Amino acid sequence: MRELFQVWQNTISKETISKILNIANKRPLYKASIFSSYEPMQNIRQSKICWLSDKWIKALLWEYVLKANNVFQIDIENNSEVQFVEYKHNENGHYDWHHDVNWNGQEGIDRKLSITIQLSNSDDYVGGNFEFDEIKTNLDFRPQGTIIIFPSYLRHRVSPVTLGTRRSLVAWYYGPKWR
Image (cartoon, rainbow, N blue to C red; front, side):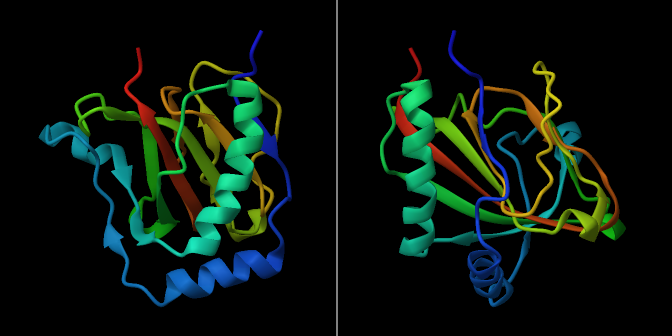
């Protein structure tokens, strides 16, 4: 049986996290959006984002995606979008249950693997837990530098941040349409 997700706890160094945060802090943050234009769906996500395209960040993520894909064996390419995400308690920061595949998206390709890297120290916020919908686990995804990689069709969320700020890096890797 294949594993449903891969986790590396406390893997990304504080130095590397600091470099990522320095890059993100120099860019303007925008209100995050979702695929759907259906108005009631707009409250599913409250966060601010910016896009990162630094080659060394993409290379770092790709290294772990390749390791995870030894288990998943999904047809993917080194083609990704990388997003810095900030969830603040005073802005009701959260991202309710969703999957990352845009079924009506790009022609000929789909998001296949999703990656999340925890940039905040777990003491910097309350709430804001990364959770899978149909997978029960006792693993702690909160430690700073933790990497989670999973097939993009798995439903997941970030629960509401009730105190402080949660920062993460997320990316999606593409391949031919799901069949």
